[in-house]
Amino acid sequence: MTTETKKFNERLGGHLTELLECAGISGKLATPRLLYGLTAEFPCVAVVGLGESAEQTVDDAENVHQGRENVRHAVASGVTALRDVQCSHVTVEPTEHAEASAEGAHLALWSYDELKAEADRQRPVQLSCAGGDSELWRRGALKASGQNLARTLMEAPANYLTPTLFSLSRRPCLRCRWEVVVRDEAWIRQRGMGAFLSVSRGSAEPPRFLELSYSGAGAGAAPLAVVGKGVTFDSGGISLKPAKNMDTMRADMGGAACTVGVLYAAAQLGLAANLRAFIPLCENMPGSRATKPGDVVTAMNGKTVQVDNTDAEGRLILADALCYAQECRPRAMLNMATLTGAISVALGSAAVGVFTNSTAAWHQLRAAGTNTGDRVWRMPLWKHYTKSMKECRLADLNNIGSATGGGACTAAAFLQEFVAEDLPWLHVDIAGTMENTTDVPYLSKGMSGRPTRTVLEFAEAICQQGSR
Image (tube, rainbow, N blue to C red; front, side):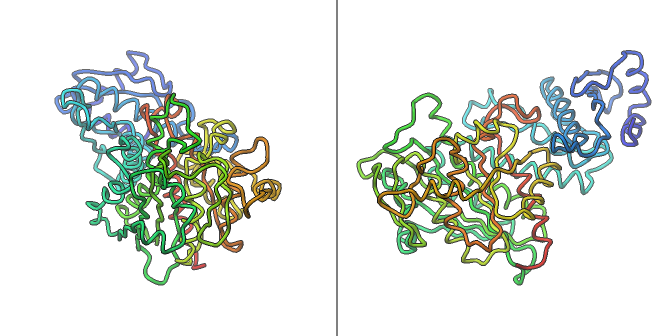
């Protein structure tokens, strides 16, 4: 029994220990047992085992801090069990990992039901930490709030979150000490973002380019640039997707959603970091003006691209966004995108795929993922894949390339053509983790908001270094 558990047991008049012994309740991970009538203060108590690895640190074979992950799982199981018996206020014992406890609790109770009748919505539950909300508890709660914001944006129907509505939807968060600049189509055209514009051509909804700036480290510190793919609905364009599950393409702006979640949480936490976010927003639709397979477009850096598959649109909007993001002279650049189905084939939902030109930056991102339980896995960024993208009859690059297989790798090689060689850069393909079914026990079914907490922790770490 941990120190915090002993303190909590004292508040329960010592009954917890007695009942655990009498009932023979084991420490099996995330198997909740509800106990009633212990005290007037706590009429219902959920007891959940932390498993055998509660005190374990990092499991190198699994790339995860198993102790923290068990706490997230266990706390989530407990708070959802209490919510299901109509508890409106839940006090959580923080165990030895208060930050992970707060994450598990707040992530587990999130739901997207604002469009349902009030009677069908989840009842709100107020959360607090036993012994008072410590700084670690607050940190975990705010990290979870960033991921929950990303989940909310990803779940929103595409007609409720068009490019214009997305660019305006976070204005109430200006109190978070970030700056918001919304660029219109004329600005996008003036900047020469032909690749981005080519994707938006088939939609009646105009494109937008959203810039967010958070300055927590002073004017002299170089920022981390975060670029998020913002296709608010992806039909595939002329290369139309199958009808089955096309509704989930409302979340093809998952990279943009996670980017907003990162800056939101960073601002709420008051991180000593400078972050700049760049989000190209558009729809990919098969209208009469839509880009046709075989068309050639020109990106912001002057490179021409033959578009042989209009469903490979994410890399086109990111190409121009990456070019523009480098104008702020960042210390490093990271982009997130639901980019390829191929990454799902390679990794499933166990981790997001990372392609990078910087081993040092990779180690920092990997350490962040190990700590948050939201893992990352490095994928190859070889010239072999670049060669495939350059084998093009009509232009400098083809947007799908000539290779058979390795689709996630060729997409990353395409993006690298728009990044300066001396700039530490990480491309994070999040298509495989876009949705959660039963993969992560402390997330409900639906859009996941992964890997918001991992990128947030990475941003904090990399911004503690000296200027670029």
